[in-house]
Length: 360
Image 1 (cartoon, rainbow, N blue to C red):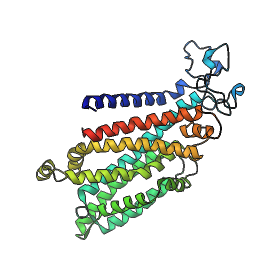
Image 2: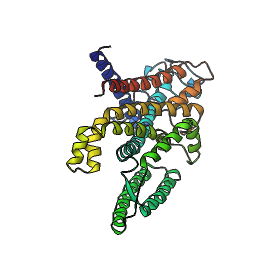
Image 3: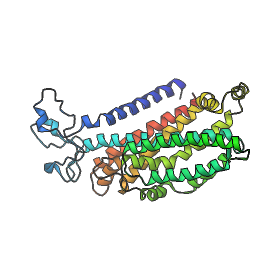
Image 4: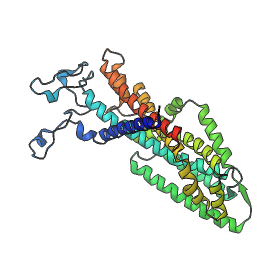
């Protein structure tokens, strides 16, 4: 395939992803059950699908096929993609399932990208001998790290702002850790070389040696209930090692380049070299891993929902639609969500392959 053809196909795939994202963002306005009190308002806009994801049509239960009429006098109330056993509209569930997949893919990718890329940058740049630390600082960091992980897995609540405050506390912790280390270094010359690269490699090896789905089931037992945020956090814990592994390899390849050596000679700080000189040059690899991580999160969430784990019953999902139609001859409940999953994964993987080949 020519370069122009591949570029145009990549733009098409990117456009399809944008359309799916728009559908996910507008899901509450595209598919919901209208309230009769709002119909009298002159500013009211009738929804595209007049059924919510959990609205049950008692006249069209037991797997009504697509295009079936629930109201012969009004075509707008037809179930264009059929219904499930309880009479819930499949089109509405697909729209809200797109929203669920988008949020889980984005959140898990973001939660895996930030620590994974940061660890990969530091590990590849500092190695095992460059990063120095006082013994007291190291013990304080390990102890505080266990406390942080405790509050991640045993939170007092599951709201998004809880994890936002937790992340803010982590930033404050790292600042305090750097200040304590500077104070202790001034009072004592006893420092150790922290083997960050070896520690990260051992973590990656342990993660690669264990099946991800079984780890997911085990970690889910630590949470009191399933939610989009919890599922995203668990998926991020499984996938951040991929970001760290590939980022580390790219940093090792470029840290001996002339522009990095010149930045060191000019006296630039390590953080400036990492984030102003090295990171922009390894962005294509990070974009590739991000696309694969996004599609992998969608597949993993769909697998969990198909098996009956994870999200609450009232949350629409591709996997739940698939699970509802697997034991009956409701072909539309298998073909439609399966096709949606295929479109997500194919487009994201094509974009990733384009960046991988072009290295732009």
